[in-house]
Length: 177
Image (tube, rainbow, N blue to C red; front, top):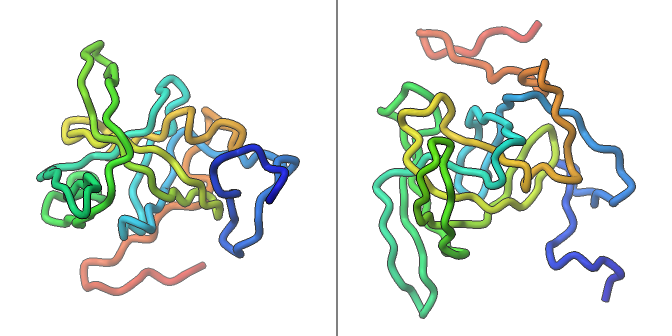
């Protein structure tokens, strides 16, 4: 038994080391490349939004079903903005359904899942609502609940973990300088 009152598992960095409550907060920019390893998403450009309580992921072809008395959701993700030809399929248990007020003031019921989020070499568990974000500037929004007591946001900075390397038209990687 541990002295940690948190019901969640301790966060870890990429080395597998446990992060202690006394560890300094990591500074992130207002937009970052993040990973969702349990959903097989290596990189998705996310807006870090301290004005939003919850985090949201663009999902389409959403289908719910029951397996062994557990409600699950099957959905597809477009991880790259303006690239609808690339998609990743995911299948995870549903954590809950939640009423969420969007930025335009509309309230809708959304499916919530819990998954790992990798950001600046840290892996944290977050709750994500699934929504159609096709018309939004970012396929993912990371809200304040996901970053609270973990990260500080520098509103003047972007991509502090670096920019995602893009392949050249011939399919080769650019050289590292």
